[in-house]
Amino acid sequence: MFTVRRIERHQLPYFLRVFNSVTDRPIGFLGNVSEDGLMLISQLPMMIGAEFDLRLKIPMAGGCHQVIDLNACCLWCHEDTTPHHYDAGFCLQRAPPEYGQLVDALKQYFSFQPMPASA
Image (cartoon, rainbow, N blue to C red; front, side, top):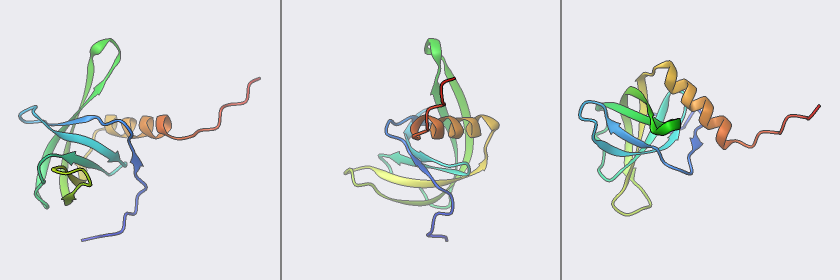
């Protein structure tokens, strides 16, 4: 099992809910993302080595949601600094293109980008 992160992750100051894609019940919140994985913050510990069917519901204009279904394997889980919460790291098995677009959009939104020069 690896202990050193190879891919930079981007922290999210506001959390998006994560759902079980089979039952559509909430299981936690998105803590951070990368192209190949994510961290889930949950009130229950996740089973390490188990595969999970996850669903993200991305808020869109007009009150609609974009649904992104993911298959992910839990690589680690430990208690969060917040009592009765757990952090779990997931490696994505099959991520649709929409997930990559979400990661890119979040990186751009939460990064300090230089403003384009005005003409």
